[in-house]
Image 1 (cartoon, helix red, strand yellow):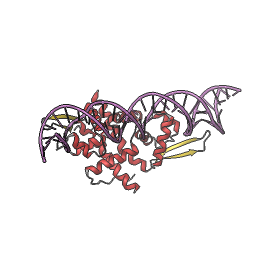
Image 2 (cartoon, each protein chain N blue to C red):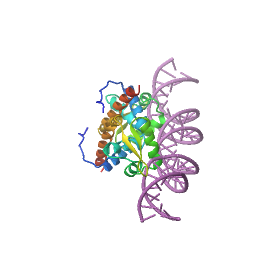
Image 3 (cartoon, rainbow over the protein chains, first blue to last red):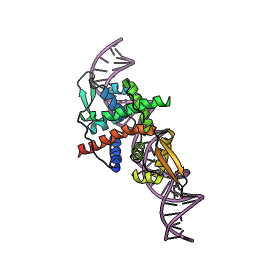
Image 4 (cartoon, protein in one colour):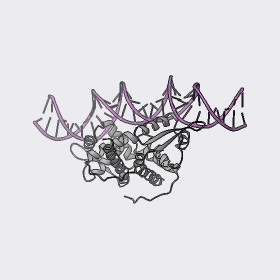
Amino acid sequence: METPIKREATCEQELAAIRDSLEILGGKWKLRIMRYLNNHMDEKNTFKKIQREVEGISAKMLSKELRELEINLLVTRTVMETRPITVNYAMTEYGLSVFPVTETLVDWGLNHREKIK
Amino acid sequence: METPIKREATCEQELAAIRDSLEILGGKWKLRIMRYLNNHMDEKNTFKKIQREVEGISAKMLSKELRELEINLLVTRTVMETRPITVNYAMTEYGLSVFPVTETLVDWGLNHREKIK
DNA sequence: GTAACCAGTAACCATTAGTTAACCGATAAC
DNA sequence: GTTATCGGTTAACTAATGGTTACTGGTTAC
């Protein structure tokens, strides 16, 4: 995991950066999948296992989202020569850079739930 | 701005927290609007000014997103008795709690742009 | 032999998200 | 009197998201 470099940016550049981030990480599922993989890096994470634990996601969506994360080099896909064949998904080194994003969203969500209670 | 409290949570609770956050902050525009307001807290931020500076947003979307942010107590809407009438949008104290989220997304987006270059 | 598990894909449909353009009434500037 | 600005709304549309069901083909457990 690279150490984040503090940058100077104009408001315009900041808003463009948020747009860029959301293009890759936005939507209902990607950050949840990333968080799940982050929390289970020491295990094999098969398609079915991810689907069971990322609650509510359909096979179709999971398949699509994993493919997009793979294209953006955030996760790897490895076919395992087990019987029956399983497929292992894992975070890449680069995928780890998403951790602070999910972390702030977890914190905000937990805090918000407290607040509206 | 409340100081964030570190919490213990299971993976399941974390994923639910991300879902909650995205329900309120998700989509193409909300976090960009929040960031813009955060960067311009010392000014009056009228509808048209926000629309000019949050590049690409239509009046319809801005109107809808601001209404939803207002409902969730993240921004306030104040009609100003100027001629012509203007409307001022401002972050609430609670809205400030979103800052860490936009900050990590700005950092990630800037870093990502460097990386793919 | 039959049922279930694995990792998906394909087809179809419904809902949601977001865009574009026109328009509103009030006021002010030329 | 015409045009521009303010803060939006409305309608019509497309694109993206997401659900459901059925299906693949090989393997293993009953």
